[in-house]
Length: 311
Image (cartoon, rainbow, N blue to C red; front, side, top):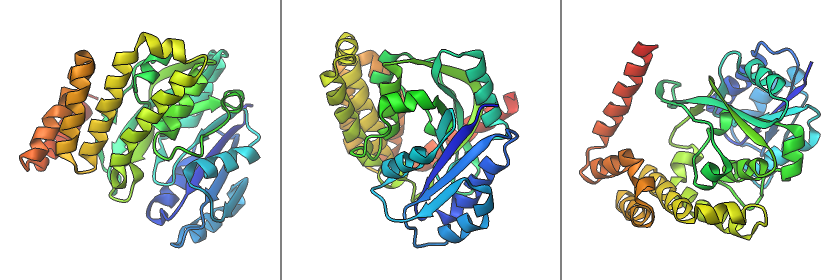
C-alpha cells in the first residue's frame, strides 16, 4: 500500500493546531507518515504536539526560516511516495487522503492532483466553497489559484521541482505548482478534500497586501526560465493582467480598497477579459469604499446557504 507523507509546518497556532493534527490522524487511510515541524512556538503548540507524539513519525520545535523552510525540512525526512503539507490552521475532510491515493492509482502519469476546498472562519464555520476546474500550465501562469490544502503530489515531482523556494513567503505554493506542471501532468478531482481557515492572524489575512508582489516575482522567474518563457510569451498580457488582479484581490483583503481599485483597473487596461472575469472583486471594492463591508459578508453567507440547500 502506498505510503503518504504529510507535513504540518507550525508556528504559534495553538488555537487550531489540534484540529489539524486530528484531521490527519483520523483519516481512514491506514498508511500515513505524519511529520510536524514547529518553528519554536511560544504558545501551547509544543504541548499539543507532544500529546500526539506517539502517533507521529517525527516532530521538532526549533527556530526556522519560515513556512518554506519548515516544509522542506519535513519532506527531507519523509519516505512516502505521495507528499502533501497541511498548515497548522487548516484541516482535511473525512476520506481526503484515501480519495487522493485512488486518483493517483487510476492516473499513473499524474504528478500532482488537487481537489476542491472549503473556506471556514476562525470558529470553523463554513462561509464559502471553492471549486476548481482542470488547469493547464498557461492557466497557472495566469494565476488560476489552487487551494493548497487540497493538493497532493508524487515524491518524484517534489524532488524534480526542487521543493519550495525559501525566498518566497506568500505564493510559494503556486510557484511550486508551476514548476511541477512544467514537467508533469496535474489533475483535478471534483471532490472536497480540505478546509482552509481564514482568521485575523492567518497570513492570507494579516499580510494579504504582500501576496501581489510575489505574483510579479513569479512572472519574472517564468520569463527567465527556458521551459516556461515560451509558454508565458503566448499569454503575456493575460498573465500580467492576472497578476494585477491577484494584487487587487489581496489588497482588498488587506483593507486597502483604493489601492485594490487601482490594481484592478491596471488589469482591465492590460487584458479586459481577465479583469471582467472577476467582477465580484470590483463589486467588493466599491462596497468597501462605501463602508458596506457587511453587505459583502452577507452575500457570501447567502451564497453558502444556497449551495448547502442545493446539496
